[in-house]
Structures are given as structure tokens and as C-alpha cells.
Length: 163
Image: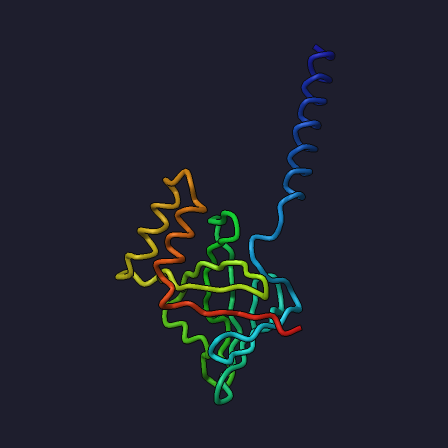
């Protein structure tokens, strides 16, 4: 009985060690890091103030802080994030986030990253719900994200690193 307990304890410890090691090996799921500053195609300056927070300064003194949360959907150079307004400074929102959450595909690029809009949390917006359902059932998430990225280029925003 004691040998079996020691054996199971050793196996459990080994399993936990491997899990911790593998969890630490994962890279960032987003193409930016804290302290980086980007300029987007609408002359907004985006400063990454935390892993899940952007401060955006834009045209005509528009400024806001956004909560940017990576979702579980990431494949290759593509990842899906949700963006919501955390605080409007001067009562203005430079990214014009209309609903509670808006969803974007981010694509890593040489000088920064690009984003395309793929839906929102609004109850009447079925686009994000359909994409999410497809992602959950897809065996090739990278191909699906790439296809959605290409299909939504009319909403493309480029973010180029300035620092």
C-alpha cells in the first residue's frame, strides 16, 4: 500500500511538473507588449499600458483607455481579441467602440500588426457568433482565421510600431 502511494505521488508530481513547464513555454497570444507605442492608419497613437490595456490618443483630443482581452482563438500569426471601453477621457472614444465588446482578428506584421473587425457582443450581431461557432468546430483554425481576415479587409487598420 505504501509503495503504491509513493508511486502515485511520484507520477502526480511528474505530471504537475510537466504541466507547469509546458504552460510556461507558451508565447504571447497577442502581437504587442507592454510599453510599445503604435500609430494606426487613422493617426491614433496606441500605447500598450498593460497586457490587457491600451491607451489611445486620437484626432481632436479624443482619448480613451480600452480593455483588450485575447480570446482562446489563436493560430499562426492570427489571434482574436475583444476590445471594450474602460474609460473615456474628455468623453470621447477614438476607436469608436459602439457595443460592450467588439471582436477583431489581429495579424502580426513586420512593423507591428493589423486588425480587422469581425463582430460585436450586440444581440443582433450574428457575425461574431457564426465565426466563433466555426472556430470551435474547425480543425484548421489558422486557415479559417486567414480567410476571415482576408474577407474583412474593408475594416483593416494598420498599427505600426513607433518606438
